[in-house]
Length: 115
Image (cartoon, rainbow, N blue to C red; front, side):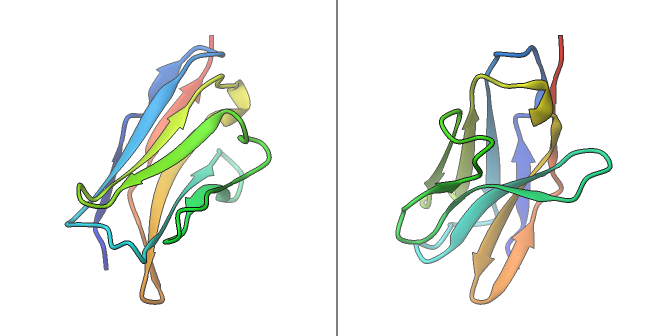
């Protein structure tokens, strides 16, 4: 399994921006599928964005045009740039690395969008 540590969360006003980072224990392989998910209080964990090994990104409709996922394989880091944040983006954000048929999760980082 891959050990993952998310960071970069915090409190931000509506319309603001944040960049989340997810550091893996070692490199990320080019064949890994890496993604971000989020879970709001009282809700199930939901998909946010993903980059498969081929590099073609996919986003949830709710974040399309506002969030950008990226990866640096050599640094072993996955990023989520979030802009034009809305109160409904408030959640714990988790990164996931899927490798060789097994997924690994980090502990999550809290994002709160509030005035």
